[in-house]
Amino acid sequence: MSQSRVYADVNVHRPRDYWDYESLTVQWGDQDDYEVVRKVGRGKYSEVFEGINVTNNERCIIKILKPVKKKKIKREIKILQNLCGGPNIVKLLDIVRDQHSKTPSLIFEYVNSTDFKVLYPTLTDYDIRYYIYELLKALDYCHSQGIMHRDVKPHNVMIDHELRKLRLIDWGLAEFYHPGKEYNVRVASRYFKGPELLVDLQDYDYSLDMWSLGCMFAGMIFRKEPFFYGHDNHDQLVKIAKVLGTDELNAYLNKYHLELDPQLDALVGRHSRKPWSRFINADNQHLVSPEAIDFLDKLLRYDHLDRLTAKEAMVLLDSQLIAMCLFVFLYLASSYALVYAAYASSCPLSLNNILAHPYFLQVRAAENSRMRTQ
Image (cartoon, rainbow, N blue to C red; front, side, top):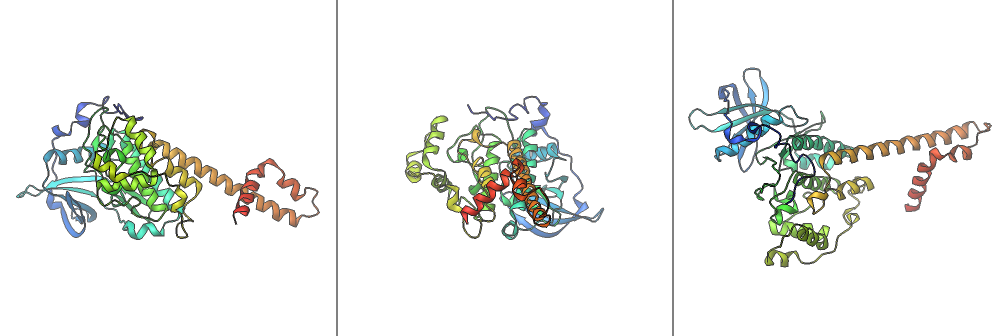
């Protein structure tokens, strides 16, 4: 049996009414408080509109749900209520339904987001780190509350770039995590499905979201969206195997006592692991640092238990940022020393003496490395 490395027992220690969404009694608001302005999107389970709250003239998002099982609607509502106020979690404002058709709608806070296909190509390496960190805040929070999102992808990450505001939306596939429980593998969008879903490992956990985040990050830094572009679920595993290799895939299958069906095994074939450097080109090299590769490599792992958790990913990004800030500080300090030495040439403290100080060892090493690669 596979069990999450973190937050495994959250729901064990919560009262039943926290996770038992089927017993939820929905408190319906007044649908007449809201008017539709324009359609902004659609999905498998809903139509999404920009709207206005006529009682206070504030903009909102109206998600009109398509006919689905009541318990699925209750699950989404319960999860949104449990996560209300969490960092970068879209806020559920109201729940209403049409008096005649009984069609339910969820009312959310408005986010003035830019289409990711337009936004992502404009992002700097700093922007990417910033928004990934903001997304990690949302994921660590929902995981800490015993909830897997199960549909992390660019379409579900709203970004208001002007305000540098991010919201994780669409909790329709989210589920409460219970250790040992077997879940439906028909979740997440194809390009962001973790290997566990593609090989039918059902006792997966929060780490599924971390694979999806890794796919997003790869798409952003390599400017290749989606990064794993499978034509169907079988081909999706093939695309992953062509990057991560089949030796590691087989080790994963053996560890969890899984077998691919003969047809899928033949499709996957045999592949060696590709180095991440293969994906660097003139268009993306300014976004692909050694730190970014290290971060990506620790997310895109076959074995879900080997992936960074959201908290670990934040710690790693923090440490990388501190290291980069230190490098910049040292580099600027060494540059200042050069200027100072040139200006105050009569000063008994020579430039060589200044730069011989251990303080500048990292700067000299980095500069020497840079010069060798030019």
